[in-house]
Image 1 (cartoon, one colour):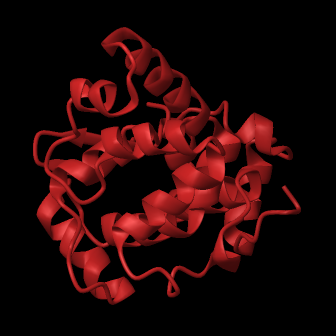
Image 2 (spheres, one colour):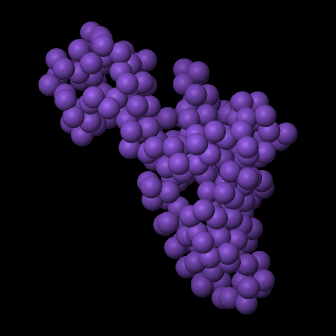
Length: 206
């Protein structure tokens, strides 16, 4: 717990529960934490952020996204940095479709690369397994920080188009990413929950 940058009141409240290790903290129910007088929702949000940054240190751009000109560039950097084989990375990017409302059909890949539809599906599935590993998702921590900042400013699920516009403004992009492209990327992250045209942070243990 010493590695977490927490206010003294939060440390006192956790100490009263006998929590001295991050592992134990993650096993405590949210309701038990909120029952402590010195712990409120703001403190829990701070705890969540500190734990995530402890477990997933920033790896891309020194935590700075300003050198990326668009959502597409971030996704491409993430995919190509994870999947070194050019053809497999191309296939994964086509399915993520970071600037499109829909991913490209598998048949298009098969026709272009001379592969069967089933082989294309296998390659994409293998790529997705690599992209969803926590160590790989950690490379997107600077982006997750921007998403969390927007989500925490709302007291309810955020419409995807509002989140997309918020990212555009915060990162000075010329265009906001398509809602569907955000959904495809957010599906990799266990903390983000999309429901229809909204997105929210997954609640802590009930």
